[in-house]
Length: 212
View 1 (cartoon, rainbow, N blue to C red):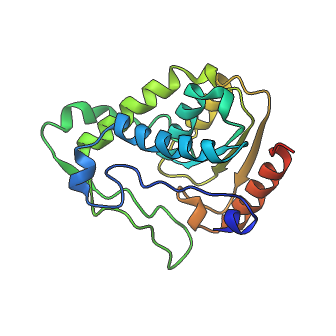
View 2: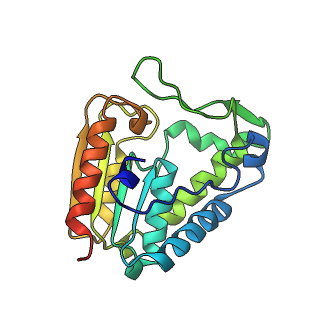
């Protein structure tokens, strides 16, 4: 909303399987999520001469994938704790999904007291495996990303390993990458103590790259 208040047209698509029930998430995969993001991007691109794509966590992976496929049409990426790998224990998921349908919720990684994230009470392992396959697809083509990037990373992210940030820095072809540390936030940083820092950094990045 702060970005919209600053005069930018904003699109926040609800991806397939998100914002409904974990059972609906269970029957979707990375192709569905990317298709939803791409539809919203193309609709916005038809209305605007300059387009930036932002994403948190898996949304960061989807933003990178859009930049891989639409390099000439994306003017910049804003990535908050982008997920491209998971913790080593996720290596068991391809087998475990056949034995265990769901695990505990992975939402609400937030330090700020009294703030919670709207998330499913259960996480389907089939969807977790689909996310892991999406990560692999994105990592394989990161060299195609060449637009400016604003990369915001929580110092206390307990969901996405720091190596995800290293992979982005090492493998993209972007000549301009602006890093901002979020010292007082966990994974869901836009709802945490550093929310204002994220907003200020984002608005500064947009102002510096909008086509005049």
